[in-house]
Image 1 (spheres, helix red, strand yellow):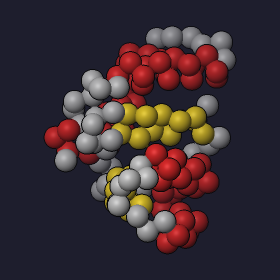
Image 2 (spheres, helix red, strand yellow):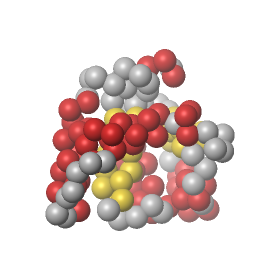
Image 3 (cartoon, one colour):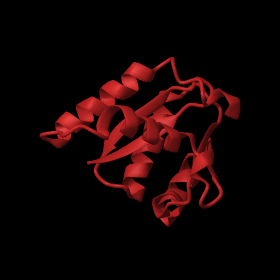
Amino acid sequence: MHLGGIVNPLTGDAFVQRIKKGDSVSFIGILEWLNKSYRSYETILVYVDNARWHTSEIVQIYQSLRPRIVLEYIPRYSPDLNPVEWEWHELRRVATHTKRFQSGDECFQAVSEHFKSRIGKNTMYRHLT
């Protein structure tokens, strides 16, 4: 099971999506979700790490077609600067680390419940704005 995560630093809320795999096509799917979810925003600024699927040619082409989505790259080897990394750490600590799941669906259910339980409570990101 692969997950794509997003943290909104304005609200501190984190969102997760199940994706087929960590690749450019899945990443573009997440960007499209952002594009549709934040229609009223003139610019959608997305901070990402330097994973290959964030920097690929197909992602660059997608960006040229959606100029309001702007990707900013976090310095290499700086996971402490990436709010979604903090969220993954919390997810593992609270919801998945000591659990055994019978299926990917059961695991994703636990992940989804964890993220839903944190909406409106994620204040650690607000200092980034």
